[in-house]
Image (cartoon, rainbow, N blue to C red; front, side, top):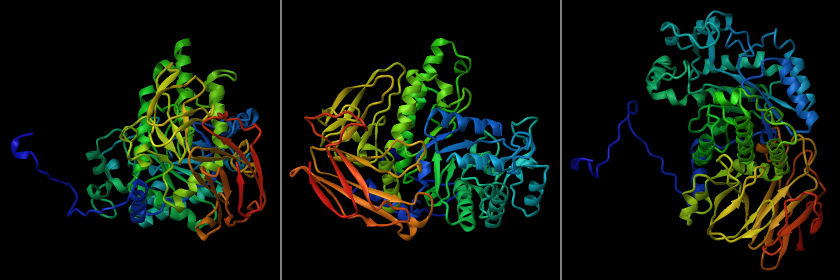
Length: 591
């Protein structure tokens, strides 16, 4: 720097008339994030099924492809809660019509009913985009609800012969209402469960610089696009969230959107990281991406497991490339099973487990294992999801959140905590069968799979065979697990097996509610607190607090005790050390 500029500080803004600071103080990162949500809105609780497995691809082109995929999952006993219908289910020229092409989707109502009978939800892609030349465009244009610049400039999109198109002005409350009413009439009324709000940067014409993108949406209803451009995904989600809750205040709204803005979490919106590439280096960068996004205060994040954009060598692979493709996807599944939303998506080759590798192949076996493990962990996962609403919790946790005094842990970009107890260390290099894992200081750590104990504050060479990624459990943890499931609502979480990792005091609060509605906002939920005391070697199951319709009045808690000297494998069929018949009243047992 020139001497004249050293120790100086300047700010400039192309849009700001003034600069206002909000200082959010806290003793730790969780308190700071709680303060952020106090300013911008609480993170609403997503439906429980959204914590299950999502299958997506770019794209299912027909009704039969959707139904046959779900049938294959159910026939193979691969757990599944959500299937995603990506773009172009409409007639090619009618982008924005929100209508199914009858030649490819002859009976969408029947298709959705069939999915629901199989306990599978349907998420559908909806863009804020309208092609010129059909009735919906004309109607919105007459109301002055559309941006005009892209039309005037004569740009066409990349579909077919290319179509003249533009986006609606989501900053206009009446335009938002019109947009939702169209979605409601033509999609939601058929039974659609969730919304994929794509291209919400907004991306009216792909790959243009931001300066031109701003020009294409100038002015907005609120004013200059220079001022309001970045807030498009927020107001777009707002219209859908508020619109659906007016029509149906029973079923929880769920939105997936490609771009985010402060406060997005209050509109039941999650974000994913966009069209990433199917490369090892891209998988690694997703670790830091998810951590940083979560630290921004928005708890629901996901990615295209397997990567979206595929190298040509994987499309028609030789033997070596095929095996690399399979291993890449297996490793990405292992990582993806421990992020807030477990979602597979990408371009060809198809991303269903059975299309990646045959049954019996290590990749297939690993992906199925982690899918099933995700569902076994559902009592743990849904409890931490409940915490995001009730206590402003963060599910995917940068290590600085829980180990601020350990600077080595705080600065790691390739590991994170999933909830309070699970240290996730994805493998992101081809053919690696081990990786360096740093175990944060201040407590010991247990290998999730073997129960072997390690002291904290050290780097170990962790085993990472093809089918497993290193996961360690913090000493002083209680991890509740449930029965094997094919979908989240298949059966009640009974019995629940509590894995108690001793060596320090431990606690966990089991959270349950009705899973799909908004009664939790009215107090319809229940918690059960578990507390383990190391000194007395006792576990207390506290009084149940609260209630909700359909709650299990009586249930069984099985307890598996893991100590530094008695390693126990993660075996859900092993004999428990203790079993408690619980009726909602507090009980204490000696372990």
